[in-house]
Amino acid sequence: MERACAVCGSDRFVPFLEKDGYRIVRCAACSFLFVHPTPDPATLRALYTDPAYFRSEGPLGYADYAALRSFWEAQARERLSVIECYVDRGTLLDVGCAIGIFLKVAQERGWEVSGIEIAPEAAHEAERLTGCRVVSSPELLLREGRTFDVITLWEYLEHVPDPRAELQRFYRLLRPGGLLALSTPNAGHRLVQRAPALWKEFKPPEHLNFFTAETLLRLLVACGFQVLRIRAIAPDYRAPEWLEDGIARARQHLGDRHDRRTPFWFLYSIARRVVRWTVIVHHKLLLSPLAYAGGLEVYAHKARESE
Picture 1 (tube, rainbow, N blue to C red):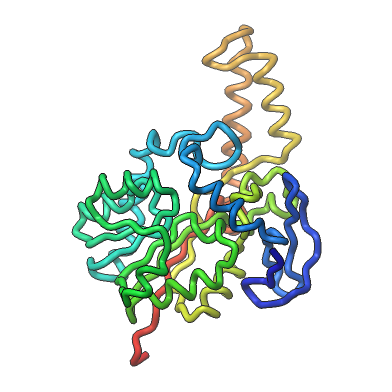
Picture 2: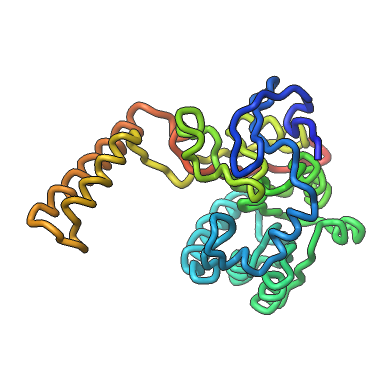
């Protein structure tokens, strides 16, 4: 399906990367990266409604989403602590809520929660876990005239064919003064420019949009949001590929503490630590966090009518 740039509306694109039979392009006007043409809706629906998406052995989806529950819970508590700095506890809608772990943590903190989830099996599990209502799309909530104090889009915007239309829908579902919180992979990572084929987030048709802090900010402002905070998350301290390859070869030949195949296994362990800490120091002293962050986390609010 043909599409214009969701960020600026331009129809001028230049090729950027071919991946798994899909073409990723860069907008000639604003540099936004996205899959063009968009996969057909039936392909996308089949991907996300397949129960295997949450327990997949392939490159798409999650190997075992439920097994990571303790990680998701800790992450939810951290994100809710940020949200609660901006708004009082009230109504919260989690979009793409999966099996409801974020909803459950929010509920335990005193939030009145609802969810949106396209995968029927995951939606049923979220309802069982929380006892709250989970619908398959925002359209029903819009028809009902519902509004929420907080809407969360964790790892969501990269999946949708038209992120501008999605944000406009959720703008209508957010009460004046309400908060939008979202996260997405960071296409401003150095690897995207230096070795894009190695960036793991280029995985169409699962990911269709690839945001930098600049393109995400521009899109949110265009949709009427006032951005309060953009945070670099999931730091990815990566050495040059030749050095990473050398360390990997040393492990194969020498072994490590788990596989002491030679008496010199400790040389690999020393080299790995020296390289890692050198890279961390280099990144922290010489680079912006946005140059090596794996993801972006954004908090924005909808202006009150008097503002």
